[in-house]
Length: 313
Image 1 (cartoon, rainbow, N blue to C red):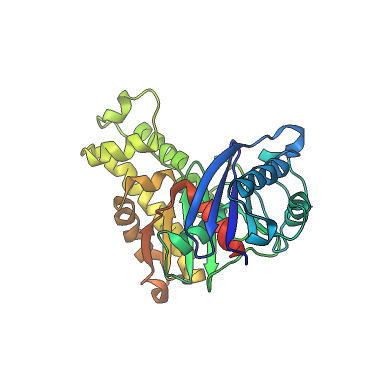
Image 2: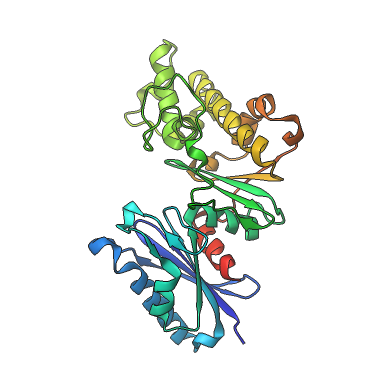
């Protein structure tokens, strides 16, 4: 009887792999390097070899394994075909077919976008536990997202659903986003967005601020100084909250989730983030979605690994 599943979360530097029982309890977790040379041709063989070694350690055969879930940093179609993963060197191919061959057959493999599966992990075992309809928003260097409806990931036709960081929310922006457009949600709601807002406000005001004394400004610095009562830092975080709340209002109006879960580095500022976004969220959201709940993610960097395992359980 199959009792175990593996979840592999492929990052640009390392692959996080977890072994789970059929109830979703993590039994083991480890990391291997992500070898991106030769167009990433070693990545899946390395994952297969590592899982086989772990199976050997635990005296498991292929019949004991329910399946393997894999995240990938790019658009992944429902059948597990990835269209492109630039930072891995991957083009278009079917991840499950390749991995199943590497494992020697008899083990099913499924794959999905990394942000979508992080959302699934948080919905399953993290901040969104118990919610069937949930959106996860990852506030890191960029802004990622994942949409869960009825307990299932919404991937979209080309696997691009949940790219909420690239919603357009500001017409007057002249800086170009990484996606090539201007005025994207990511340009304001990410960690780099906080710093962009800060530099603009600091350039416009003559008010004294402890932020001016810092050689390198980070989002953490800004939130820390706001907590310490720095007037300019407070203004910056309030402007940040305005953009964050406005973007989340658009998401809630379209999807009407029970909960929005906030993850990523910026979310480490804590519950204060939720207080900052609430005024503009309530201003812009459709009345029928006004009762959307907010929570902070709890699984951290393990969310993708959990979501990948959930995909096959």
